[in-house]
Image 1: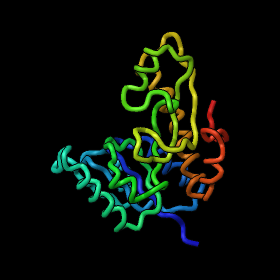
Image 2: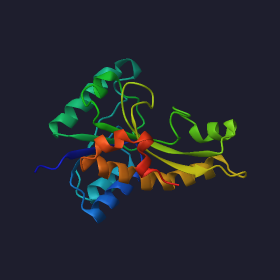
Image 3: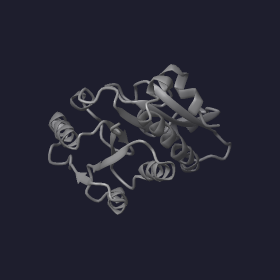
Image 4: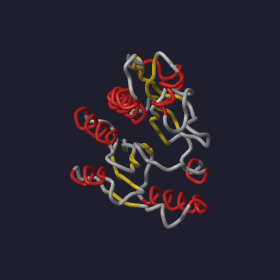
Length: 209
């Protein structure tokens, strides 16, 4: 049986990427991490990936500009197809993906978002959670579609919002849960458990307290 080939897309240090690779090494996942791609040549996560023997590539978005986003996404698609990628894991890839990209890999793109979706899609999630006065916050893993932080939910992890919380302290506690939740969901997906995850509201079996 051929194991699925996974690409991880990053823009910076790739802490979720590292959590995923660490878990995969410990647990011998049934997949191959075939590529780490970044839009930023200075991304520290590229060094981490190379040290682990994973191929890396940089696709710089800046020459394209905002008006040529579909052309940039077409370059990403070509690169991933050249590496015969089956699953794409977004791990801090700070680019909004156009339909050119999402339609090329339908139901094959995973993302983690730092809120309990559908609450607080987009940016500044921790600040907005505090401003809204919610009792809990967290992170969500979902399949990527053409909507902003939309797509079917596969799992969520919750943290309580404390009276003394700042955006930074809340973000730090959420990040701990991201590093637990994302590897669990990615392992389930590459192991063929996507139908089960989709049948459970918000990936209930992978919910973290």
